[in-house]
Image 1 (cartoon, each protein chain N blue to C red):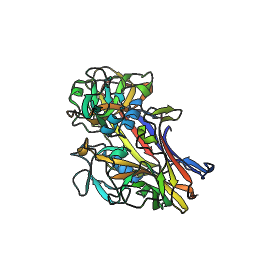
Image 2 (image 1 turned 180 degrees about the vertical axis):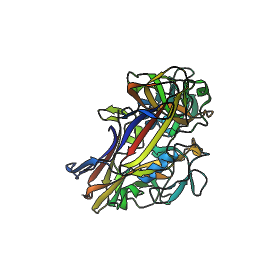
Image 3 (image 1 turned 90 degrees about the vertical axis):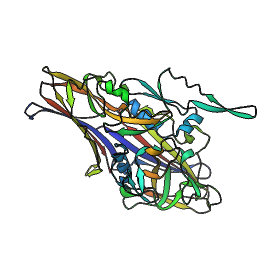
Image 4 (image 1 turned 90 degrees about the horizontal axis):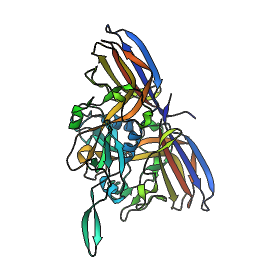
Length: 239
Length: 231
Protein backbone atom coordinates (compact mmCIF):
# COMPACT_ATOMS: atom_id res chain seq x y z
CA UNK A 1 0.00 0.00 0.00
CA UNK A 2 1.42 3.42 -0.90
CA UNK A 3 2.53 5.56 2.00
CA UNK A 4 0.94 8.93 2.55
CA UNK A 5 2.93 10.89 5.02
CA UNK A 6 4.63 14.13 5.80
CA UNK A 7 8.36 14.12 5.59
CA UNK A 8 10.48 16.72 7.33
CA UNK A 9 13.91 17.55 5.96
CA UNK A 10 16.45 20.08 7.21
CA UNK A 11 18.87 21.55 4.68
CA UNK A 12 21.78 23.76 5.74
CA UNK A 13 23.76 25.77 3.21
CA UNK A 14 26.81 27.83 4.16
CA UNK A 15 28.00 30.54 1.75
CA UNK A 16 31.19 32.55 1.88
CA UNK A 17 31.36 36.33 1.75
CA UNK A 18 31.20 36.19 -2.07
CA UNK A 19 28.01 34.13 -2.05
CA UNK A 20 29.65 30.85 -3.06
CA UNK A 21 28.25 27.67 -1.48
CA UNK A 22 30.95 26.14 0.70
CA UNK A 23 28.97 23.53 2.60
CA UNK A 24 25.64 21.72 2.30
CA UNK A 25 24.10 19.43 4.87
CA UNK A 26 20.77 17.74 4.26
CA UNK A 27 19.31 15.51 6.91
CA UNK A 28 15.96 14.18 8.05
CA UNK A 29 14.51 16.19 10.89
CA UNK A 30 13.55 14.09 13.84
CA UNK A 31 12.13 16.23 16.54
CA UNK A 32 8.67 17.64 16.79
CA UNK A 33 8.78 18.99 20.30
CA UNK A 34 6.63 18.05 23.23
CA UNK A 35 5.56 21.70 23.29
CA UNK A 36 4.18 21.42 19.75
CA UNK A 37 2.27 18.26 20.59
CA UNK A 38 0.84 19.84 23.72
CA UNK A 39 -0.33 22.99 21.93
CA UNK A 40 -1.88 20.87 19.18
CA UNK A 41 -3.92 18.93 21.73
CA UNK A 42 -4.88 22.07 23.64
CA UNK A 43 -6.07 23.73 20.45
CA UNK A 44 -8.80 21.12 20.01
CA UNK A 45 -10.89 22.55 22.84
CA UNK A 46 -12.90 25.63 23.69
CA UNK A 47 -12.11 27.53 26.89
CA UNK A 48 -15.50 26.72 28.43
CA UNK A 49 -14.90 23.04 27.94
CA UNK A 50 -11.44 23.26 29.50
CA UNK A 51 -13.07 24.92 32.49
CA UNK A 52 -15.80 22.31 32.76
CA UNK A 53 -13.38 19.41 32.46
CA UNK A 54 -10.97 21.09 34.87
CA UNK A 55 -8.31 20.42 32.28
CA UNK A 56 -4.95 22.16 32.23
CA UNK A 57 -2.32 22.01 29.53
CA UNK A 58 1.13 23.39 30.18
CA UNK A 59 4.00 24.04 27.85
CA UNK A 60 7.05 26.26 27.60
CA UNK A 61 7.62 29.16 25.30
CA UNK A 62 10.93 29.68 23.55
CA UNK A 63 12.39 31.46 26.57
CA UNK A 64 11.58 28.51 28.81
CA UNK A 65 8.76 30.32 30.60
CA UNK A 66 5.78 28.12 31.49
CA UNK A 67 2.43 28.83 29.85
CA UNK A 68 -0.83 27.32 31.08
CA UNK A 69 -3.95 26.74 28.99
CA UNK A 70 -6.69 26.12 31.47
CA UNK A 71 -10.01 27.70 30.65
CA UNK A 72 -11.31 30.40 32.93
CA UNK A 73 -9.73 31.09 36.31
CA UNK A 74 -13.17 30.93 37.85
CA UNK A 75 -15.88 28.32 37.81
CA UNK A 76 -19.41 27.95 39.13
CA UNK A 77 -20.50 25.97 42.14
CA UNK A 78 -23.94 25.38 43.57
CA UNK A 79 -24.24 26.51 47.17
CA UNK A 80 -27.68 25.74 48.55
CA UNK A 81 -30.07 27.02 45.94
CA UNK A 82 -27.73 29.58 44.43
CA UNK A 83 -24.94 29.42 41.88
CA UNK A 84 -21.72 31.19 42.81
CA UNK A 85 -18.67 31.99 40.76
CA UNK A 86 -15.55 30.96 42.63
CA UNK A 87 -11.84 30.95 41.82
CA UNK A 88 -10.60 27.68 40.38
CA UNK A 89 -7.69 26.07 42.11
CA UNK A 90 -5.46 26.01 39.08
CA UNK A 91 -2.29 25.34 41.02
CA UNK A 92 -0.20 27.42 38.64
CA UNK A 93 2.86 29.32 39.82
CA UNK A 94 2.31 32.98 40.68
CA UNK A 95 2.92 35.20 37.69
CA UNK A 96 2.74 32.35 35.16
CA UNK A 97 1.00 33.18 31.93
CA UNK A 98 -2.49 31.73 31.94
CA UNK A 99 -4.48 31.42 28.72
CA UNK A 100 -8.13 30.43 28.60
CA UNK A 101 -7.56 28.61 25.32
CA UNK A 102 -5.01 28.53 22.53
CA UNK A 103 -4.86 28.40 18.74
CA UNK A 104 -2.75 29.47 15.75
CA UNK A 105 0.08 26.97 15.82
CA UNK A 106 1.95 28.19 12.76
CA UNK A 107 2.06 32.00 12.92
CA UNK A 108 5.11 33.15 10.96
CA UNK A 109 4.94 36.93 10.56
CA UNK A 110 7.05 39.41 12.52
CA UNK A 111 4.19 41.65 13.62
CA UNK A 112 2.13 41.44 16.80
CA UNK A 113 4.63 39.34 18.73
CA UNK A 114 4.09 39.68 22.48
CA UNK A 115 6.01 42.64 23.81
CA UNK A 116 8.28 40.77 26.22
CA UNK A 117 10.06 38.99 23.35
CA UNK A 118 11.40 42.33 22.09
CA UNK A 119 14.17 42.09 24.66
CA UNK A 120 14.92 38.40 24.03
CA UNK A 121 17.88 37.07 22.02
CA UNK A 122 15.72 36.63 18.93
CA UNK A 123 12.27 38.15 18.71
CA UNK A 124 10.28 36.84 15.76
CA UNK A 125 9.22 33.55 14.14
CA UNK A 126 11.84 31.85 12.02
CA UNK A 127 14.50 29.15 12.03
CA UNK A 128 16.63 30.04 14.99
CA UNK A 129 20.30 29.02 15.39
CA UNK A 130 21.80 27.87 18.67
CA UNK A 131 25.42 27.66 19.77
CA UNK A 132 25.04 24.45 21.77
CA UNK A 133 23.74 20.96 21.14
CA UNK A 134 20.46 20.16 22.88
CA UNK A 135 20.64 17.14 25.19
CA UNK A 136 17.16 16.05 24.08
CA UNK A 137 15.76 18.15 21.22
CA UNK A 138 12.25 16.78 21.69
CA UNK A 139 12.07 18.44 25.11
CA UNK A 140 13.96 21.61 24.18
CA UNK A 141 12.25 25.00 24.30
CA UNK A 142 14.21 26.29 21.33
CA UNK A 143 17.70 26.05 19.92
CA UNK A 144 20.16 25.56 22.77
CA UNK A 145 22.04 28.75 23.62
CA UNK A 146 20.23 30.81 20.97
CA UNK A 147 22.59 33.07 19.04
CA UNK A 148 21.87 36.76 19.24
CA UNK A 149 20.79 38.75 16.20
CA UNK A 150 23.76 41.02 16.96
CA UNK A 151 26.02 38.08 16.04
CA UNK A 152 24.11 36.36 13.27
CA UNK A 153 21.92 38.86 11.47
CA UNK A 154 18.69 37.34 10.12
CA UNK A 155 17.05 37.79 6.74
CA UNK A 156 13.28 37.70 6.49
CA UNK A 157 11.71 34.37 7.35
CA UNK A 158 10.30 32.73 4.23
CA UNK A 159 7.18 30.61 4.77
CA UNK A 160 4.43 29.16 2.55
CA UNK A 161 2.07 31.51 0.74
CA UNK A 162 0.19 28.94 -1.32
CA UNK A 163 -0.16 25.18 -1.52
CA UNK A 164 2.56 23.55 -3.60
CA UNK A 165 1.77 20.12 -4.97
CA UNK A 166 4.84 18.14 -6.03
CA UNK A 167 5.18 14.61 -7.30
CA UNK A 168 5.72 13.57 -3.69
CA UNK A 169 2.81 15.48 -2.23
CA UNK A 170 2.03 18.83 -0.62
CA UNK A 171 5.24 20.68 0.12
CA UNK A 172 5.61 23.34 2.80
CA UNK A 173 8.97 25.09 2.79
CA UNK A 174 10.42 27.34 5.49
CA UNK A 175 13.72 29.11 5.04
CA UNK A 176 15.87 31.76 6.69
CA UNK A 177 19.40 33.06 6.14
CA UNK A 178 21.69 34.32 8.89
CA UNK A 179 24.90 36.30 8.25
CA UNK A 180 27.85 36.46 10.61
CA UNK A 181 28.42 40.15 11.30
CA UNK A 182 31.23 39.62 13.83
CA UNK A 183 34.94 39.40 13.15
CA UNK A 184 35.15 35.94 14.68
CA UNK A 185 33.75 32.57 13.57
CA UNK A 186 30.41 31.45 14.99
CA UNK A 187 29.48 27.80 15.61
CA UNK A 188 25.89 26.61 15.07
CA UNK A 189 25.06 23.36 16.83
CA UNK A 190 21.27 23.35 16.93
CA UNK A 191 18.32 24.93 15.12
CA UNK A 192 14.64 25.34 15.87
CA UNK A 193 11.59 26.08 13.77
CA UNK A 194 9.89 28.74 15.84
CA UNK A 195 6.24 29.73 15.34
CA UNK A 196 3.81 32.03 17.04
CA UNK A 197 0.73 30.87 18.91
CA UNK A 198 -1.88 32.93 20.63
CA UNK A 199 -4.72 32.55 23.06
CA UNK A 200 -7.65 34.09 24.75
CA UNK A 201 -7.09 35.74 28.07
CA UNK A 202 -8.22 38.78 29.99
CA UNK A 203 -6.05 41.09 27.94
CA UNK A 204 -4.63 40.04 24.56
CA UNK A 205 -0.89 39.59 24.62
CA UNK A 206 -0.06 39.10 20.97
CA UNK A 207 1.66 35.97 19.76
CA UNK A 208 3.79 33.76 21.99
CA UNK A 209 6.88 32.20 20.45
CA UNK A 210 7.48 28.47 20.76
CA UNK A 211 9.63 25.88 19.00
CA UNK A 212 7.67 23.33 16.97
CA UNK A 213 10.76 21.44 15.81
CA UNK A 214 14.27 21.34 17.30
CA UNK A 215 17.23 19.58 15.70
CA UNK A 216 20.87 19.25 16.54
CA UNK A 217 23.29 20.04 13.70
CA UNK A 218 25.87 17.28 13.55
CA UNK A 219 28.57 18.01 12.97
CA UNK A 220 28.23 21.62 14.07
CA UNK A 221 28.78 24.17 11.32
CA UNK A 222 31.22 27.05 11.56
CA UNK A 223 30.17 30.36 10.05
CA UNK A 224 33.19 32.52 9.34
CA UNK A 225 33.04 36.33 9.44
CA UNK A 226 30.99 37.60 6.51
CA UNK A 227 29.70 34.11 5.73
CA UNK A 228 26.01 33.27 5.80
CA UNK A 229 24.04 30.13 6.57
CA UNK A 230 20.60 29.25 5.20
CA UNK A 231 18.38 26.84 7.07
CA UNK A 232 15.53 25.27 5.13
CA UNK A 233 12.87 23.00 6.59
CA UNK A 234 10.76 21.15 4.07
CA UNK A 235 7.61 19.43 5.25
CA UNK A 236 6.09 17.05 2.78
CA UNK A 237 2.46 15.95 3.08
CA UNK A 238 2.26 13.06 0.68
CA UNK A 239 -0.75 12.52 -1.54
CA UNK B 1 13.35 10.34 5.76
CA UNK B 2 11.65 10.65 9.12
CA UNK B 3 7.96 10.90 8.57
CA UNK B 4 4.85 12.23 10.15
CA UNK B 5 2.33 9.56 9.30
CA UNK B 6 -1.41 9.26 9.41
CA UNK B 7 -2.79 5.76 9.67
CA UNK B 8 -6.33 4.53 9.67
CA UNK B 9 -7.99 1.42 11.03
CA UNK B 10 -11.53 0.21 10.43
CA UNK B 11 -13.19 -2.61 12.32
CA UNK B 12 -16.68 -4.03 11.87
CA UNK B 13 -18.33 -6.11 14.55
CA UNK B 14 -21.60 -8.03 14.33
CA UNK B 15 -24.49 -7.88 16.79
CA UNK B 16 -22.67 -10.29 19.09
CA UNK B 17 -19.55 -8.18 19.15
CA UNK B 18 -17.66 -10.62 16.95
CA UNK B 19 -15.02 -9.00 14.77
CA UNK B 20 -15.93 -9.58 11.14
CA UNK B 21 -13.73 -7.09 9.25
CA UNK B 22 -10.46 -5.29 9.93
CA UNK B 23 -8.81 -2.89 7.51
CA UNK B 24 -5.66 -0.99 8.41
CA UNK B 25 -3.38 1.14 6.29
CA UNK B 26 -1.48 4.33 5.70
CA UNK B 27 -3.69 7.30 5.02
CA UNK B 28 -3.14 8.74 1.58
CA UNK B 29 -4.83 12.06 1.46
CA UNK B 30 -4.29 15.21 3.38
CA UNK B 31 -6.85 17.30 1.52
CA UNK B 32 -6.20 20.41 -0.48
CA UNK B 33 -8.66 22.22 1.78
CA UNK B 34 -6.60 21.33 4.84
CA UNK B 35 -3.36 22.45 3.21
CA UNK B 36 -4.92 25.79 2.30
CA UNK B 37 -6.07 26.33 5.88
CA UNK B 38 -2.57 25.42 7.01
CA UNK B 39 -1.07 28.02 4.67
CA UNK B 40 -3.50 30.71 5.84
CA UNK B 41 -2.67 29.90 9.47
CA UNK B 42 0.79 31.41 8.99
CA UNK B 43 -0.62 34.92 8.65
CA UNK B 44 -2.21 37.53 10.82
CA UNK B 45 -5.66 38.84 10.12
CA UNK B 46 -4.40 41.80 8.09
CA UNK B 47 -2.24 39.77 5.72
CA UNK B 48 -3.93 36.43 5.16
CA UNK B 49 -4.16 35.35 1.52
CA UNK B 50 -7.56 34.71 -0.03
CA UNK B 51 -7.55 30.98 -0.75
CA UNK B 52 -10.70 29.16 -1.81
CA UNK B 53 -11.62 26.39 0.59
CA UNK B 54 -14.65 24.14 0.79
CA UNK B 55 -16.29 22.94 3.96
CA UNK B 56 -17.29 19.31 4.42
CA UNK B 57 -20.59 19.96 2.67
CA UNK B 58 -18.99 21.62 -0.35
CA UNK B 59 -19.73 25.25 0.51
CA UNK B 60 -17.03 27.62 -0.76
CA UNK B 61 -15.25 30.22 1.38
CA UNK B 62 -12.19 32.44 1.08
CA UNK B 63 -9.54 32.54 3.77
CA UNK B 64 -8.85 35.99 5.17
CA UNK B 65 -11.24 38.88 5.01
CA UNK B 66 -10.85 40.39 1.54
CA UNK B 67 -13.28 38.23 -0.44
CA UNK B 68 -16.74 37.02 0.43
CA UNK B 69 -17.86 34.72 1.84
CA UNK B 70 -14.90 35.42 4.10
CA UNK B 71 -13.83 32.54 6.30
CA UNK B 72 -11.30 34.50 8.33
CA UNK B 73 -7.92 33.44 9.62
CA UNK B 74 -7.58 30.01 11.21
CA UNK B 75 -7.35 30.25 14.99
CA UNK B 76 -8.33 26.68 15.76
CA UNK B 77 -8.69 24.30 12.85
CA UNK B 78 -8.14 21.07 14.71
CA UNK B 79 -11.19 21.73 16.87
CA UNK B 80 -13.19 18.67 17.92
CA UNK B 81 -15.04 20.38 20.76
CA UNK B 82 -18.55 19.24 19.94
CA UNK B 83 -19.99 21.40 22.71
CA UNK B 84 -19.32 24.42 20.54
CA UNK B 85 -19.75 23.09 17.03
CA UNK B 86 -22.51 25.10 15.38
CA UNK B 87 -25.52 23.13 14.27
CA UNK B 88 -25.39 21.86 10.72
CA UNK B 89 -27.62 20.69 7.90
CA UNK B 90 -30.20 23.43 8.22
CA UNK B 91 -29.60 23.73 11.95
CA UNK B 92 -31.35 20.39 12.41
CA UNK B 93 -28.34 18.31 13.46
CA UNK B 94 -25.42 18.37 15.83
CA UNK B 95 -22.21 17.25 14.20
CA UNK B 96 -20.30 14.52 16.00
CA UNK B 97 -16.51 14.72 15.81
CA UNK B 98 -14.53 13.49 14.09
CA UNK B 99 -14.56 10.54 11.61
CA UNK B 100 -17.42 10.63 9.18
CA UNK B 101 -18.41 7.88 6.78
CA UNK B 102 -19.72 7.87 3.21
CA UNK B 103 -21.14 5.11 1.05
CA UNK B 104 -18.88 5.53 -1.99
CA UNK B 105 -15.20 5.86 -2.74
CA UNK B 106 -14.12 9.36 -3.77
CA UNK B 107 -12.83 9.85 -7.32
CA UNK B 108 -9.88 11.83 -5.94
CA UNK B 109 -9.74 11.94 -2.12
CA UNK B 110 -7.20 14.76 -2.04
CA UNK B 111 -9.73 17.03 -3.73
CA UNK B 112 -12.73 15.71 -1.83
CA UNK B 113 -14.52 17.93 0.65
CA UNK B 114 -15.65 15.02 2.79
CA UNK B 115 -16.63 11.39 2.53
CA UNK B 116 -18.27 10.57 -0.80
CA UNK B 117 -21.61 9.09 -1.74
CA UNK B 118 -24.33 9.37 0.85
CA UNK B 119 -23.23 10.62 4.24
CA UNK B 120 -24.36 7.96 6.72
CA UNK B 121 -22.38 8.73 9.88
CA UNK B 122 -21.84 12.30 10.93
CA UNK B 123 -24.48 13.67 13.23
CA UNK B 124 -27.36 13.35 15.60
CA UNK B 125 -30.74 15.06 15.21
CA UNK B 126 -31.14 18.22 17.22
CA UNK B 127 -34.92 18.19 17.41
CA UNK B 128 -37.38 16.45 15.14
CA UNK B 129 -35.15 15.62 12.21
CA UNK B 130 -34.85 12.04 11.04
CA UNK B 131 -31.77 10.27 12.38
CA UNK B 132 -28.88 9.33 10.16
CA UNK B 133 -28.45 5.57 9.66
CA UNK B 134 -25.47 5.39 11.98
CA UNK B 135 -25.52 6.62 15.57
CA UNK B 136 -22.44 7.47 17.62
CA UNK B 137 -21.62 4.66 20.02
CA UNK B 138 -18.50 5.52 21.98
CA UNK B 139 -19.05 9.29 21.90
CA UNK B 140 -20.11 10.68 25.26
CA UNK B 141 -20.96 14.30 25.97
CA UNK B 142 -19.91 13.77 29.58
CA UNK B 143 -16.62 11.95 29.09
CA UNK B 144 -13.27 13.74 29.08
CA UNK B 145 -12.44 14.52 25.47
CA UNK B 146 -15.79 12.90 24.64
CA UNK B 147 -14.28 9.45 24.87
CA UNK B 148 -13.01 9.62 21.31
CA UNK B 149 -9.39 10.57 21.97
CA UNK B 150 -6.85 10.83 24.69
CA UNK B 151 -6.66 14.32 26.13
CA UNK B 152 -2.91 14.67 25.85
CA UNK B 153 -0.19 13.52 23.48
CA UNK B 154 1.55 10.23 24.01
CA UNK B 155 5.09 9.52 22.92
CA UNK B 156 5.30 6.29 20.97
CA UNK B 157 8.14 4.66 19.09
CA UNK B 158 6.90 6.42 15.97
CA UNK B 159 6.63 9.85 17.58
CA UNK B 160 3.91 11.94 19.21
CA UNK B 161 0.60 10.24 18.50
CA UNK B 162 -2.83 11.77 18.14
CA UNK B 163 -5.46 9.05 17.86
CA UNK B 164 -9.15 9.71 17.28
CA UNK B 165 -11.57 6.79 17.31
CA UNK B 166 -15.25 6.85 16.44
CA UNK B 167 -17.64 3.95 16.77
CA UNK B 168 -20.85 4.10 14.76
CA UNK B 169 -23.79 1.71 15.19
CA UNK B 170 -26.04 0.98 12.25
CA UNK B 171 -29.39 1.72 13.86
CA UNK B 172 -31.34 1.57 10.61
CA UNK B 173 -33.11 -1.42 9.14
CA UNK B 174 -30.85 -1.53 6.09
CA UNK B 175 -27.28 -2.58 5.36
CA UNK B 176 -24.93 0.16 4.20
CA UNK B 177 -21.69 -0.07 2.31
CA UNK B 178 -18.91 2.22 3.50
CA UNK B 179 -16.54 3.35 0.76
CA UNK B 180 -14.81 6.41 2.22
CA UNK B 181 -14.04 8.10 5.50
CA UNK B 182 -12.93 11.57 6.54
CA UNK B 183 -11.33 13.17 9.57
CA UNK B 184 -13.43 16.26 10.21
CA UNK B 185 -12.29 19.23 12.29
CA UNK B 186 -14.06 22.42 13.28
CA UNK B 187 -12.78 25.86 12.33
CA UNK B 188 -12.57 28.90 14.60
CA UNK B 189 -11.89 32.30 13.06
CA UNK B 190 -9.33 34.30 15.00
CA UNK B 191 -11.81 37.18 15.20
CA UNK B 192 -14.17 34.84 17.02
CA UNK B 193 -11.58 33.76 19.52
CA UNK B 194 -13.40 33.44 22.81
CA UNK B 195 -16.86 33.64 21.27
CA UNK B 196 -17.40 29.88 21.31
CA UNK B 197 -18.31 29.73 17.63
CA UNK B 198 -16.94 26.73 15.78
CA UNK B 199 -17.88 26.70 12.12
CA UNK B 200 -17.63 25.58 9.44
CA UNK B 201 -16.36 22.02 9.47
CA UNK B 202 -13.53 20.79 7.22
CA UNK B 203 -12.17 17.40 6.24
CA UNK B 204 -8.44 17.34 6.94
CA UNK B 205 -7.98 13.81 5.62
CA UNK B 206 -10.13 11.77 3.25
CA UNK B 207 -9.47 8.13 2.45
CA UNK B 208 -11.13 5.50 0.36
CA UNK B 209 -11.34 2.10 1.95
CA UNK B 210 -9.29 -0.36 -0.13
CA UNK B 211 -12.42 -2.44 -0.40
CA UNK B 212 -15.83 -1.15 0.66
CA UNK B 213 -17.27 -2.81 3.75
CA UNK B 214 -20.90 -3.63 4.42
CA UNK B 215 -22.31 -2.80 7.81
CA UNK B 216 -25.54 -4.66 8.54
CA UNK B 217 -28.27 -3.41 10.86
CA UNK B 218 -27.08 -3.72 14.43
CA UNK B 219 -23.45 -3.97 13.37
CA UNK B 220 -20.83 -1.62 14.78
CA UNK B 221 -18.09 0.02 12.75
CA UNK B 222 -15.04 1.49 14.47
CA UNK B 223 -12.93 3.98 12.55
CA UNK B 224 -9.62 5.35 13.84
CA UNK B 225 -7.07 7.81 12.61
CA UNK B 226 -3.66 8.15 14.23
CA UNK B 227 -1.38 10.98 13.24
CA UNK B 228 2.27 10.59 14.20
CA UNK B 229 4.62 13.53 14.63
CA UNK B 230 8.12 12.08 14.35
CA UNK B 231 10.64 12.31 17.14
